[in-house]
Length: 410
Image (cartoon, rainbow, N blue to C red):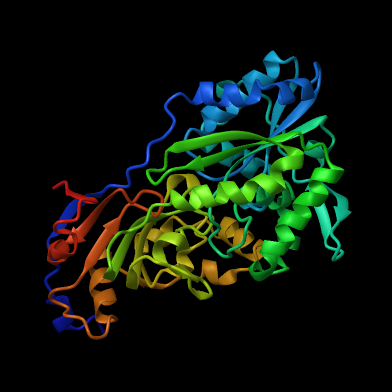
């Protein structure tokens, strides 16, 4: 029995037009100078002592200019006489193994040859304290035993909860440096408690471990570095809410009112912690994202995994349809380790699998009640991190005509 009816297969899909969304936010051109200026201030210079072993904590997100930022931080610390090295700070990512986390860093160009710093990857943790609610706080043993820890993190709205502190330095300290064990333990508290738990855990870490300062990064709507700041450990909890507000103001979005079918070419952990960012698509594994102001999207299709996600398909559960090619690239061990550690098995559920993209689009349209299947509103994006240039079906042109924020590319 065929999956699609003959009438469905006779649907003629619309012509697609490439358009550019204009966000109008510029970035930093000279990364090395921006980072160096932050580190070479009197407070940090006085903090760094010759011979100190400094652990630079680096995560698994696809941060623009990450390798250059990490290398510059390392070079600055070496010039001050310290002995910096890199520790992966990515919770359960990389399949929850030391070698897997080293491979994740390497995929971003962060390796000993290019960066000029040793990488010490270990999954061993120790308990450094507990919160007022008796939640144990775990940390990478190698980082803890260093003389100073310098986390590098991007400040960004989280994909699954809203609070004054979301993704950033506090989350990297609490979950990233907690490795697989710490990540798994904190996710048992549930995302609904993260707004309270993450700052409390971060506070314990700041008091009980050698966190020196953090490098906070904010990216603009074009996925380019817009802001870099060195934040002293004691100021992180006070500074991060304000930086989060800045990050939210720079978030991109799909500037259209409604979409019948959204085609997402690729998802991945390097794109978003959720595979595809709920702040762009308006969906979480628990339902519609609270306060979402983007388009009403009826159905979502995912076509592939990004190369730098290393087979981790976390987030495919947000889609309605995918294709056979997608399944062939999934590393189930890496995916399951991540979704189980985060207490979110829904993120790893496989949606309906169609033979190819055309059949997936037709199937998705068949599941959009009340629309004209022969005149659907279809949008195609590369991923949720890059929505500057998108494709829209020709019948959506009236939605952008006269709008200075759109430009027809081809």
